[in-house]
Length: 85
Image 1: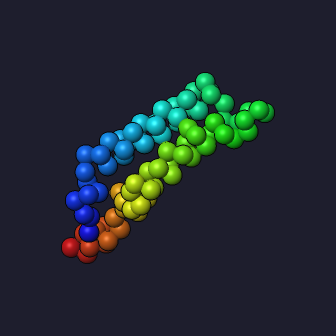
Image 2 (image 1 turned 60 degrees about the vertical axis):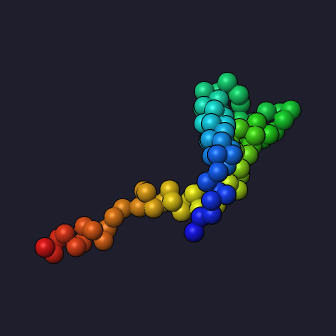
Image 3 (image 1 turned 45 degrees about the vertical axis):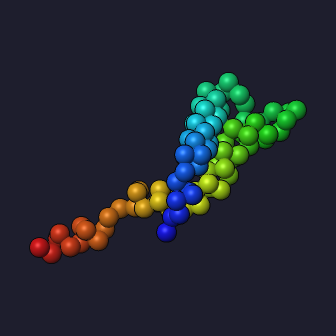
């Protein structure tokens, strides 16, 4: 039940920017170029590099977690049907 406004080019650019932001921030944290926690800033680097883009992604695509779970969920029903044939 998507409307045309949700699949606009502007929406797609925002979604792409949020994904790049998340991937770049995750790479920076995993490579330890930017520490996840500092004495001066606390957990602020981790939030701005991972937490904030996740919030933006969830705001843009609220059904994204459900779609990702559907991709990784094992297809048990199909296996059961094939076993009986």
